[in-house]
Image (tube, rainbow over all chains, first blue to last red; front, top):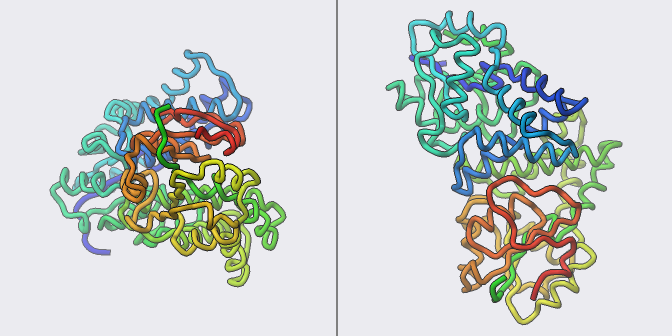
Length: 217
Length: 217
């Protein structure tokens, strides 16, 4: 890999463990994994569809819409208070166990988050997970009103850090995000914690790791 | 609804029954529904992702990529001959039972297909299903090198038929396609054969039917 002058991280599933979102589902279902799996899938679908349609709504709106669809699709019922409770799980996420040590190791070069999350969602999760002092930049797609994997989103990294994409290392656990960042021109690490197969999108990560502690310096 | 001067149909799942694709899966798995469900999901995902990334590849390429991912993800194995056999199921689709009668009822105004399918895939399916004489236009996204729900795709309908979107009736069984067409400006009918809940994308169809014979004239 070429010399690295800065780091850009995906947020949900990469730095932030969304396990607490799964747990929150127990208030309305005995199968919270089925709920959270479809909710996450619909959340992503709605970002892609709205980006393509040109009808951006922020990630909070999209996440709630995906939740409401999922509740209906699975034949569940939820009071407004329960919907709020589920949504608020997104505001109090923990980070994965290795994240703090991994970010500390990279100190000295700028460390940024680049995420689909709405600014208020990202601010809450960064605070709740104790990452405030370990990140120089928290960048939301909301600045360009579209979603990953649009090149308009990936361009925010080089623009904010003042470093070209080819000198930045982009780190994500989401295979489709890896493809988007690589197509844009970043050096890319795929943190594949679960041993998932590679996405077949015509581009490949530069490196695959199974823990953020293995990010090259 | 306003007066209608032409009809634009989605293809896969709307006119063409993809059941034969499910059946073809039996050559590599005892659970062909799991295979076809993930294959279809990945096929759509890859169209949305490639459209957003700006890395268009045609629907044949995307469909095969989605199949290869799905085979790996489900831990199946398939020879190259079996992959070819599965892919070729897309070239010999049947139409749903009511399609011919429904299209005949609409004769006198132009009837078009507007589909993600590659031109060769659509030509094969229209021939195999016996719809050649019942469609005045078969339009592929390949002309604009992107995918639904991009407005660039929906614009091909009015452009080809010489009729404004507001005077065309767009018909699809896919909820997300319904949303895209409505956001673009068509009058839209959702053919919801399976009683699925509406997508939460901020736009709604003008009419919901459960069979194409109920399309308003």
